[in-house]
Image (tube, rainbow, N blue to C red; front, side, top):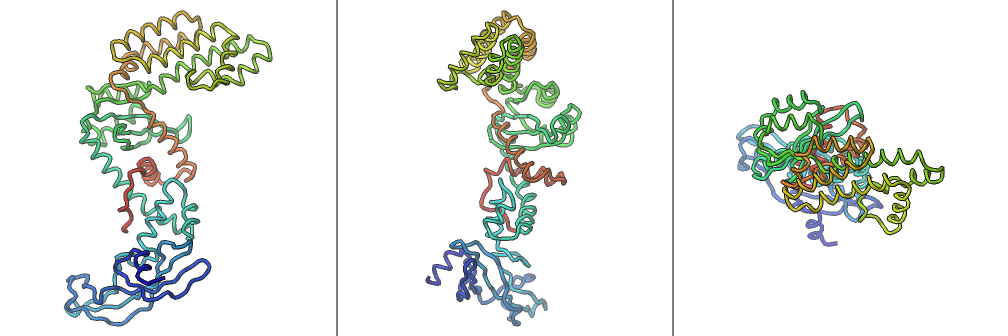
Length: 418
């Protein structure tokens, strides 16, 4: 292979390939020298009074792999001396940091592969020690987290139609929770903090004045009273929207309670069938296959009240999807509640009570059609991150890792220069 093509493949303009020293089954060793003959003094920045004082030998640097082989660059560690400043220094290369054994491009590639997976996976891809890749990953995480958070907050502050999403996710389900703040329109996670109680939320707002400087048009959240109280205090003019996913969950839960009560009155065979296929009651009928629809029709035939509650649930989906404006939505919501009143079951009555208590927030969806669907998707990423990293003990690294994990689709090529 021509030397000039090797230079282009390595993508290191400051070096010139001298010779290929060896090629083995898994490694290529290449000797390279600087293109420039002199380098400026690190103090006075001039090269006029700089002279060569010998060499410390060859410096070994791992670079990006080529042809599925490790690439090792051997570059001279040249000693220099500045007579004006009376200081000695060693030739500094731009493609690799001082006292580093891995080039910037190698570190960038390794860290990018570690994002969204594990250091062990990246180490296998790069044929490097796991501990080395893990160290690179740990060094890059704070830098990337700070950079991405700054971009996300700047975007949120300048967005005139800002829509926030607020939701919690479990660290230990039933015991410990974190709250995440999301820019739904900008598709970024702005911040996260421990706790989900009202005092935790108020403490966060007091400690982060930038949050109060936001001017959201709307905020999407579940039906937790603490969130609505907090958002009303922080942004009194914002539209508070009850998240469709959580609202629908109350209705689906009511249908499942009806199913359980009906199930206990059936024969053993019918009871087993209803229990085995109870999930067919949850999704909209139009999303089911022909075979699933046939099974569902058989399940609904077991009880009139089960069919009525399922039709009531389906009507709620239709109301969400087909209400063209707020006025029609208000009328349709009233008719849907009246339809529920005809179903004589405690679970349905309880769900209706919740729906009427949160009627304004539920109908607000038709004033600003946003949901926390992307937030739920990020929660899946966070859970996967927690499993991969075994619940990091360092809270700062844990937070930085999650912010990078949720915003890594915005990573740029200017990553690791330290």
